[in-house]
Length: 250
Image (tube, rainbow, N blue to C red; front, side, top):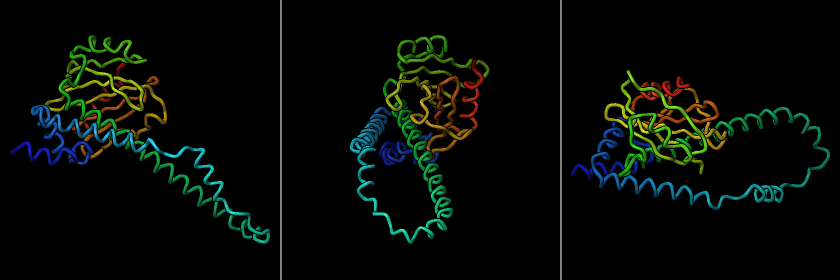
């Protein structure tokens, strides 16, 4: 049966490991099949629960420092001071290179973790029986709905003359901070636009332009103290076009 074939791809879909063409076809099937949509939602919820549980018992900074102090060796004898002076420049260069490499790797992992969480939110929203809490194609109806529900305001772009359609919106959370999730339709695809307060390390600093996370394309930027994310299974040019509409909105 068709559903059996799609269910075999659900795990790869929620993990962002499907090619864009397969992800788009599966997303279309989820909109039409409530049973598969429920299975996808269950997988997303399980994935997020495991991620939360995995962070529950991380060692504190104080514990790490205590262990490092206990493992610190005794100072070597004074006769090796000359060798230390000679080796110091090379050691500093090595340490600096390692520090830069670790920083870049940490930022990349953090970015991918945030993008993965947003992709989970996007999938869970589309798999839900009620993807949006305020249903309207009118930006002047959707924007006021968020007043009092999130701690900031934002503007929505005018879509007249474009092939994008506003579907509605809902409140979403990133790093336990509330924000707006707006759903736009382009042809047979749904695109999520997330807006949160920019909290530096709690959000993400993205490279300019859309980036691929295999199943989805993501673009992110900051504006007026807010962090924007555009997530969808469309092409990078479509993500960039919708992003530009928001960037041009006053």
